[in-house]
Image (tube, rainbow, N blue to C red):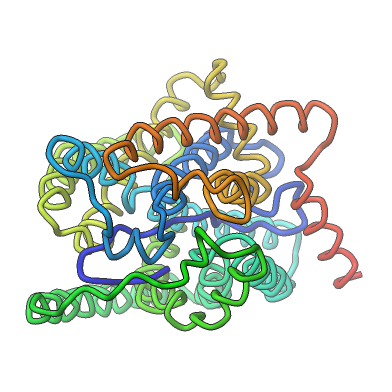
Length: 400
């Protein structure tokens, strides 16, 4: 994922729990927390709400980041609004859930008398390989590699005492705020820079599948900047997720915590996020304000499940996506690419900027419906998703 003057950014999944049916699932023993599957499903389809604008831009990721070929008038503001709604919220939610997943794994290891982090480095290594393949073959805005590295660090941090974990959280947060401030100063001083020229030839519209693989290789460092820049933020959010889990955010005793998170997330952060993001402050909302909205979403779903533990029809569909989150994350990007990029149907290049908003909304609804349907029918026959099955068997083969 790439940073620019004030770009939106792509998002993806996290929350790895190896040796479980879903390597992206956070699971307790003996009872499973249904809220986690629902949150994971919401987050997976929420990331698509950000990433879909990359696919429907004729210039791909670079056109999206540099805001090339923007529409005019009301369509411009409609595009800004729809891009801002999911911007950063689901990246933050997935990152927080990753920390929750690590906390659950650690608790499970302790109950089983096993050392922590134990075999987690193997799990992190498998996730990194998954991310590397996903980066080259599917989407250059993959986040799995970044989550693998950050999760490995946090796994060892969780093996320390509460005071050490708190210090890590404070230091990581402070570094992130400092970096975000310096980034803001740099962007303010760099406003006079001329926008870069469109890539010619355009690998997204004119290139083959292999051309895009080569293009990602040639620009790998550029496309990997965001995971590096947000490394301190990711550490902080992982640790915050673990802290919230131990504080009982999914239990009745966490009512006060959930109430505060919803007030901060929806009452304060959400309005600020929308106002600042719509006026060009996307970098600050994505990395500074959006994680607080993520906490509000987490608290709201947790509150609903504390009050009513059973799932309705809609929640069950999201839960199914959450149970095979890794498969759906990769597949939804692959399907969107096959519809929009030149190696597939190449529809993005045919759509004018004025028509991009309704086209993007339509593609989002189509791909989301496909993921919900795919997850439902797959899990009626199989215990785990295809990528989760491969991931789990690989882990067992390595650690046998």
